[in-house]
Image 1 (tube, rainbow, N blue to C red):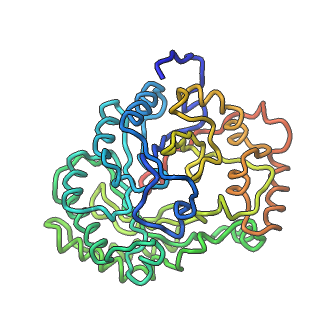
Image 2: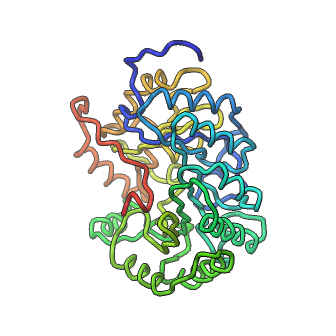
Length: 384
């Protein structure tokens, strides 16, 4: 890994990437119905801390992407060196995103979280109703303990000093289908109405449980008071306006929000009918726990692997994978089975229609097409 890298080789932003996800291991303490991890057939794997250092060094040397996250399909706070990883990234001038399901938010871990302070924190709470939580998330612990841990964490983030610039706690809702074209595509079998395993939750149906959760935070915080009027205003705004992947559920401080997250079908990469032509502008590069470098944040088994970072430098891997990456980003005939399914449709006839439409759009030679603009990593703040 000490070989000199040709400076003419492509860099991350040249290939349309704006964030690198490092899967520290492929272990999790949940088995969510909307996540591919429970159906993953890959053996358990874990990166050594030396591997993580090497990856961070290469990202920093690349100089075009400064945001890293430490998950793909795993719970990063189970990794024994997670806090060292965050510190190592910051020492290299990189911003960090920590996404956690919240099940490990003990007092000890909350203290460490505040001390080591990732740049951004996402708490994937999703279900704060006991009625569905354990069934959907495959969680074997006590729901009351789980919810209390997240409330303790948010209260600490409100009251105590830390360096986290942006905190977002997500709650699962079904996709909002407003546009007539989207409604037609659902009717034609070309797309799902969100994830089929997500219960029909909405800002209105979630109000009682969210109000209860916010009052739990109020009882733990010296500086937060629940405002029902704000809650109602956000419900009304969410019902009237399309925001994108996220809608504001509640603003606790200038930097801490609870958001409604609209789910797509999380297992479509396995379950959809494939198409032959398509385009994807995914901007997430991922390094799996076995070292495979994949070009998709939905890829849980290396369907789109273009190399292995334990064997080759990152920029050589990007150069080797350039034809596949550019073809996918520009639009054309799809070469990866996982991409063909992920970009496909839930119904066979829908896949035929989508493939025909995409042939009209992306058929033929795409060499002269420009690479599309790199998409930034999305949060409620970036969408607002």
